[in-house]
Image (cartoon, rainbow, N blue to C red):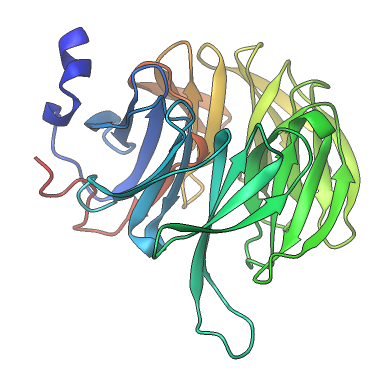
Length: 332
C-alpha cells in the first residue's frame, strides 16, 4: 500500500465505462480517488498536496475543484484528464467549497460568470474566486468558523454554515449582497439543498438537522438524527445523513420530515451525495478508507469501494458521464 500511495499516478485498474463517477478527496494520503460507481472500483489516484478535504465537481465547467487546508490551496483539475490546470493559495483557513456555474450578471455586464466559493474557517468569510481567471475577486463576511457551503438550484443565493455562530449566512446572487442570517442548531457544519429548494443543515453539536425555508429565512423543522451528523444527501423522497460518531446513516422523509430508519455503514462517515440519477447514495468512511453504497429505495447498503487514506469528500463529488465518455482520459 505504501508503494501505491507513493505512485498514485500509476494506478490503472480495469477500464472505466460511462456512468457515474465519484471524486473522493483523501485527506490523510493527500490524494483523490476516482471511483467508477458502476464497476465499483477505483480507476485513478490523483495526487493533491496539502491534505485535501473540500471538493466540488462541476461538469458544466469540465472541472473538479479541491481545497487543501494544510497548504491553503484551491486547485482546479480537468474532468477529462484528471490533471491539474490551475491553483491559487488563499489566506486564512480555506475549508469548504461550492461552485455557482454560469451565474447571470447584472444588467450591462458580460454574462454569464462562474464563481467559486471557499469558506475561511479562521477569518469568518467566504472567498469568492472567478472560475475563469482563477483570481480572488471578493470576500463575504459570515459568522464565526464557516464550514459547508451550498448554492441554490436556481443560483439565486449562496449560503454558509457558520459553525461557531450556530447560524447560516445567506448572500444573493449575482450581486453577492448579504440577505440575512438564520439561527440553527448547535455547531452546523455540512448543508445541502433538497429538490424542493429547502436547505438542510447538519448540526454536529445538537445531533439534528435544521430545515430552512430560504424564501422566509426561517427554520421550519428540526429533525433528530444520529450522533454528530456531518453531511446530507437526497434521493427517492428521503434525506440521508452521515452520523460520524454512530457509524450510521440517519434517514427521514422529505414530505413529512419524520425519521424513518438508520443504516450501519463504515467507520466515521462524512461526505455524502446521491448520483445524478438518484439510484445510489455514496457516503465516505474516513476511518475505514472506503465509500459505502446504499440503495435509496430498498434502504440497503449494497457494497463498498476502497479509497485512499482518510476519505472525506466534503462537498459535491459525483458526476455523470454520457455513453462513450469517461474521466481521466489520456492521463497516463
